Image 1 (cartoon, helix red, strand yellow):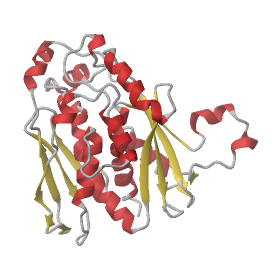
Image 2: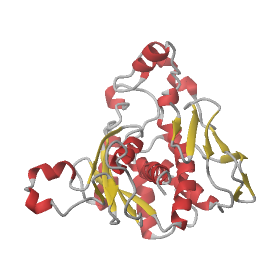
Image 3: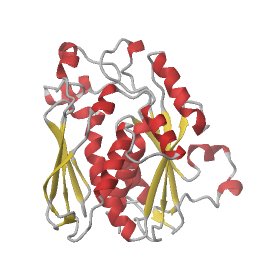
Length: 316
């Protein structure tokens, strides 16, 4: 399915090298004033583009990290949002919000060789098995290009959550074995020069969420967060609180660490979770042609925030 959520529903559509990608966001209340600059900035972060007015060391560092080893498509797509309905004079109308982002740098001819070949580690083969047909143009529906629409929808959720005092912030905390942020860009660039790729870990912190959100059995809050985050391309793992490392510690040492969720229900403290993104299998070193990322985890940060916000909006 291509629909996420029940209270707010987000429908995603479009293929990587089709005319456009886009979404329909329904359930957003009327009267929400939209920060379009925020949407622009989040899309730029996803693509690794330098943000206008970003002249601080922190902004340059983030840009250089996101830009290191990124595919030419991510750099060249302007990601200009066209609003089709639901917004007037910067304010939501309470009706379905529809938008598209045209694929202006689509070059399907770059992928013609895939008409009769399956890429290892990609969804090419299983898509054809499931549907009897597949869009071979750069991954089609399975492409990470689709996540730009999620970022737009997530910005609406983040802005609504902000009015309730709830904030979502994600950051890249590890690239390969490297945990020093000052060395992330150089690490990624090294793999790019070698025609290869590397994975990474993104950590997300939720602050301001009141206690009591989530259900104790099948609708645990962490289960909803995992469902949302694990839907992101290349995401291979989710943990919160003590996570996998907690298995090496005695209970007496870690029983006070909740990660913000106890028994599936928020406990009023900050919620902290981490998710791991695999290295892309599409690399020159693997003999794959096309436009590829050396580390997709750098672009995942705003997508993790977007999916987290779209999850939390269902509970508040």
